[in-house]
Image 1 (cartoon, helix red, strand yellow):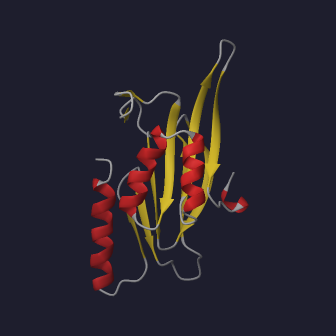
Image 2 (cartoon, helix red, strand yellow; image 1 turned 90 degrees about the horizontal axis):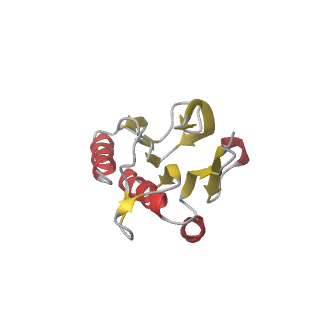
Image 3 (cartoon, helix red, strand yellow; image 1 turned 90 degrees about the vertical axis):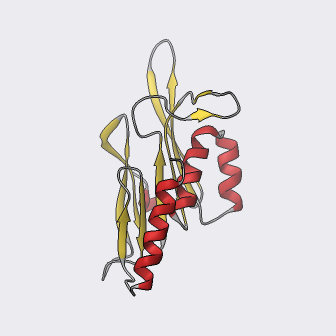
Length: 160
């Protein structure tokens, strides 16, 4: 499941390119999308990222052009296991990755659920084509809040 949907989307994109289709948005359900080219007159295919704890809150708006976006942890429940501890991931609600292809975006969004913010920052610093966003859930005795962290070269206009 971690990269299967992205791989299938990449294969569909190959097929569309073979058919000389140079603009399409392939959406693999709730978590993964790949933009091929752009609609006429647009910079890319418009997609939004919403806070999974408050779907009315838009966290970012992107225009995908020859790139993919994938999200992990968007479903309710602790279904992502940290391989270092063999336990469900703690303190994260969601992670997104934007990359050149859908399989990579799928793999990275899952990895970003497990990696520390410093590790994510280092990864994105080494690859300027990758963007990441995570929602960190912080709880204290007095209150609960979500912290939104961005990594990579986001445009200010993309962030809300």
